[in-house]
Length: 305
Image (tube, rainbow, N blue to C red):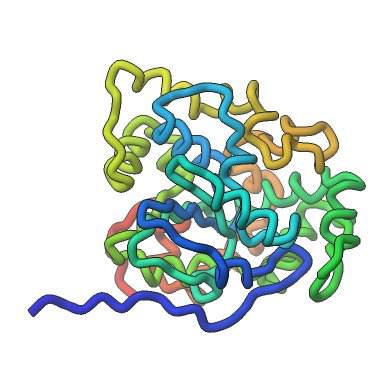
C-alpha cells in the first residue's frame, strides 16, 4: 500500500520587525515555483545565485537580489512584492526565512532548504548586524507596520553576542532551532531538498548537479564550467552589487560587506570549550542526534538516538 503524503499546514502567523508571514496567504503559486529557505546567513544568496544560473543557463548580469525577493520580509509592503513576482514570466524562485509551519505550502512547488552549523551562522549574522547602517535600522524600525520590538543595535562583542543568541534561542533575530527542526521534519517529502553549506564548499559542481536534477533543469554541458564559475564565492564577491539584496545599500561598505567571507570555523578561535559543549548539547536536545549530526557535518548518516 502506498503511504499517503501528509503535506504541511500553516498553523500560525510570524510577524516581527523583519517578518510578515501573511504575505503567503495571498501568494499565487505556479506549479514550477521554487522556494529557497534558510534560517538566514546559511547560504541563501549563494543558492539563489545557483538557481538563477541554472534557470538562465549561465547568463551574467542577472540581479538576483531583485528577481528573487525575500517574500516574507516585512519591507517593502507585501502588495509591492506580490505584484512584482506575479509579473515575472521566467521560472520564479523566491526566498523565505520562515519555519515551515508559518508557510502556506504548495505540493507542486519545489523547496530547497540550506543548512549550516549554527556557530558559523552566528558569525555571519554578527557581521551582518554589526555593519547595518542608518538605512537598515530605518527600514526595520521606522517603516509602517512594525510588529513587536524594534531591531536593537549590535552592541556586544562576538563572544557575548553568541552566548546571548544561544541562551535566548536566536536573539535578537528568531528561533534557530525551530527553523531547522521544522524543515528537517519534512525532509522526506518528494518536493523538498536539504542542502548543506559545507557540501557546497566541498563540491560545488557536484551539489549544483544534484540541485539541477531536483529542479528538473537540464544541464548545458557546453556552458557548465562557466555556470559553476559564476557561482563561486570569488565571482559573487566581484559582482556583489547584482547579488546582494538591494545592491547592499543597507550595510556599511555596501554589497561586498554583505557577501562577506563565505568561510566556516571562525568561531573556533573565540568560543571556549564550555561554549562549544553547551552549543552541541543544545543542538541534540532541540533537534535529536541525527539532525544535530547533519547540522554539524552535512552527513545524513544514521546516528543512534
